[in-house]
Image (cartoon, rainbow, N blue to C red):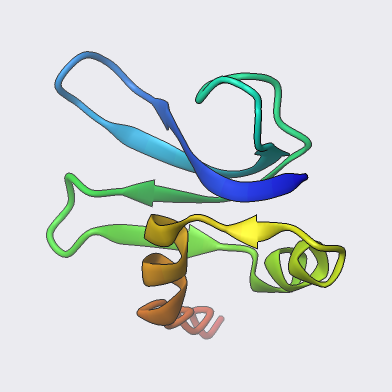
Length: 84
């Protein structure tokens, strides 16, 4: 079974997370199937960058969202691309 959850990267006391599609039984930072976003709680406000279409694809294939990722997804509003 696949799950979409956070994988911690970054130095000690400086958390930064990747949003990954991974087998449910694998370790927190184990080999993932795909990286579908990032989350940085250290910025004010916290920065979230998600590939919404890829998350929707994996959910349609049966992947389940973790509790934290579902909260991030519900509050996520993509930023408009800057006009050139």
